[in-house]
Length: 404
Image (tube, rainbow, N blue to C red; front, top):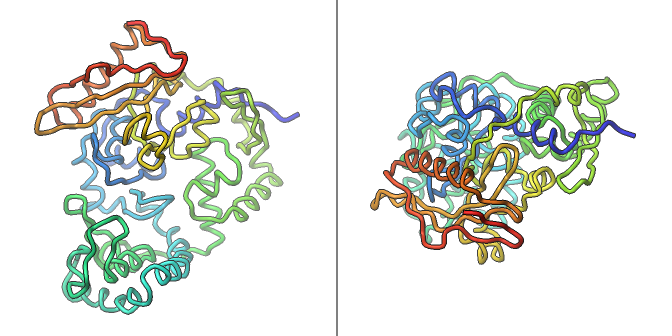
């Protein structure tokens, strides 16, 4: 029988590894902010701005002193962060950049084939011209290249060939995001943005990616290790875990899910002894970004917390029930519900449409007061003066209990 990590301790380990096990406090600028992002590994960037952009909410939920302006100096002045891709667009410590060379190489042929199927040969015909334009004229946005090309209606994937060429050059490391104007990416030649990069052998990057993923996950299957950075293949992660097992650097354990099921995972020796000594997560209620690191792997979150969560914009049946874009709500070591809200800056309000507690959750006076305090904090963070609750904003979910 394998050693077993009970569900309550598995949740605690995961929340500590994802930065939510500590009290939400501390400095949120300069080296302190960089250290937080290094601890997380990366912070996902997303364009949706219902309340505040995802990367800002992720950092604020861990450091309430954080404000969106705090991130820009690290990205655009100090260059201690860079913007590229993990499983999605992300802000990443520049110290990790040498290990992105493997991604640049591997993505090149895969994207070339994909873009050919989508755009035809036109985007490839624009690659050298786009590079020459940047070399001669300096940083550009996608609206400044391909001015002679037909433009679509501006959808996410309605790209003209030079826009596709620009994105291809970014994904393959030939250009870099030097800044953002508003939310639009501005690109420059990589050598003008990135520091000189030492060549790193692929096997060294594979070891780095697996090792640092395991450190941030605490316990994981080989598939979860591979998916963390989305940099190594499942087979490479599987081989790495097997080698670490044979050398005594990993052991297999059983992790108990919220429903009592057991999942075989890898963990560093000593994790089971260390887990009971971790302090409980703060009891305070926190509204999280839908792209929070603790929830990025939806299947892992459901196993550990019993919280079935998908971003409703992509799931029509959930959207019909919950609306367009709802935020998960964490209390201590439980995900207790989801909330639908939007910042209306012209009206100076955070407008709350609905809160759905998880089935069986009792919304007593104390919990309601904590939720109200968190909404007040979120309103201040998003730059508005007050919270406005819609009529019938507190909804019932099947089997839920409300006690006002």
